[in-house]
Image (cartoon, rainbow, N blue to C red; front, side):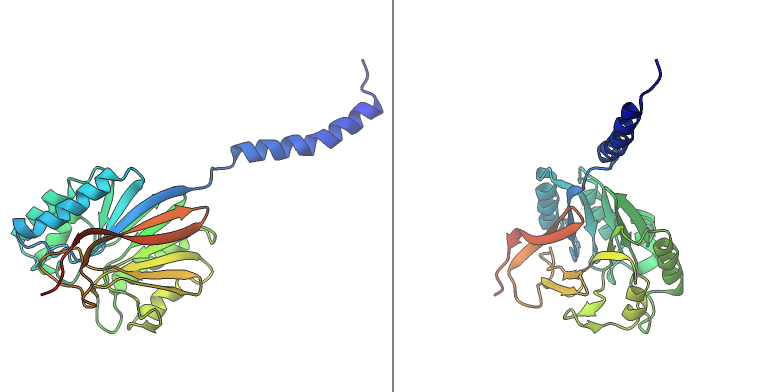
Length: 259
């Protein structure tokens, strides 16, 4: 039976609608996940590991947390017994965890021996996490090798992909004042969707938004050290990634009043 003109018209009208419906059903679902970031645990001995074990148990008990970032100063004096103890505590995590080196984790290549590479890339639900080592020369913050690694990673990331940059040292002090080398690091992300820059080191809870990027610093999670702002809370940050947006809150593991 020949196709009538009216049938061809109907088909031409329906085809775009059918294509749009097909595209809608094949698009990736919007992301909705949580991750934790913890820093400055300064694990020295079994007693010092206890509060970190409590943080691990808290993360394990929260089914929303898909992964955790450990933002340096994992150990206190960078000795091998401290690395052994720290590794034992962190292997208790039931979901993926990713560490970076702090200035208390530098001796004898022990970080690399027990925790792996200094720089790493992690991808989850369309987000890219870049964890970098910031124990480079004082005038550049990161080594030339780390800068080259970071530049190569950014070059492979699509402009609209959400990116989280994590390190031990904050790139901006007070949300405004850049450390040496920080402007060059941040310039690599021009034209990219840099959602957050996470850090520890200062032992204080700080949040700042600069050019649509969230900059955070963590309070410590240690009994061997205090917070510089005298905050009694020890714990970790919880981040919620949903529909391309990111929010954060602090989770208290233990309170340790000073004095």
